[in-house]
Image (cartoon, rainbow, N blue to C red; front, side):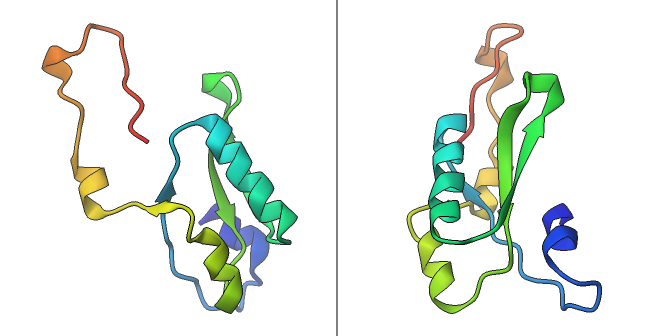
Length: 99
């Protein structure tokens, strides 16, 4: 949503939101590089409380053939948001990476 404000004028129709997942920060940065090399503007988001780790990116609204550049990424489904780690079997203080 924040990227929409950056890339669109106030009079523009709000675009669709599509969420994709990658396995690591390294892959997220590679995705950003891939998009950049193909002329797609994107905003990279970093988390100050996670040592400035890159955790998300958003693209400008994409149409036609530019959307095809996202085919390599896995779209997240409703199930991805409903599945929570089984905390009873996790050691205290640990965290599993979901994507």
